[in-house]
Image (cartoon, rainbow, N blue to C red):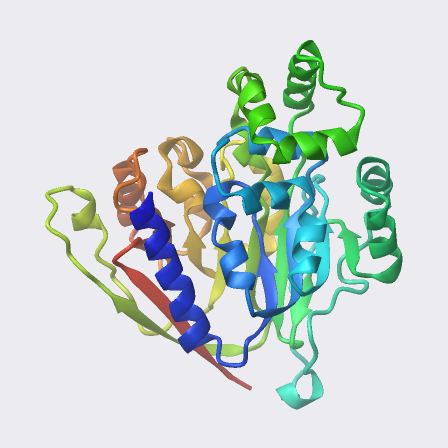
Length: 384
């Protein structure tokens, strides 16, 4: 664990010292609240200015479920789960966007860049006006479940509540499209009943937030999490991002490869087969989502984007379960694509699953394993 923490700190330090020259981040997207996806957040935010953070909304009760997954993590993580909005705003984030969950959207088309125009006519920060519609139903739910100060944040525009339909753009030419859906109600009901049996008032959201930050209470309630159907990864926020239509991208890849002494078959499959240029540079980030769950909704939502995707983050670190026996997503993406799994060398789950890499290579695509030793930087130039 100490080795993992040291590796994480070194990575964040390198990024802040050498990559983040102006100490300014336009956008951070949090796919979900599990510790392995946010555990470096406090360190990253220290001394950094962040314009916008986008994340899915979970109720206090749902955040308690996440807190009970691991009960002995750093205190700041439970403060974050208790009230993610206050945590982020106190650390200098300008604006937070909460994305609600609903069905996939049909009829979406990627806009085209106006002919003859260069970037000087389109430069702007993240646009979040009519491109992502307000989610008024979720906004009312938030007002019921969260602390009174959230109402002030909503009124002043520090917090926006949006549906996942439509898109947002950065600097006028880079498009983001999100997909999210709700935690299954049966999981929340089951968890709710268990808490009541332990004399926890589940209608008191302030009390729930206090329980999240109380290590003794977390320990007392961890049995309620063990009784759950744990398919909470399904709620990960998926993100497509890439240039709007009509732009030509020249792409370069910079990799570092280190080969530790290890006979594992994984290393044979971790070598990249990279092309110097893709016809498109669209990326799809899947978080920990299960591609076998509500695939029809996912397909409906991202069908207009599939032909533009060249780079895919494999869901749940290359997990066999989240990939499935007949991976639907793989059949939708061009053979000329790069699939990236992010997983620690010594993880106890066997990620990335070797069957995932075999599927990718049979497709004629490329696979790359990002871990403590191997990294990849993708750069592109837009031709106007």
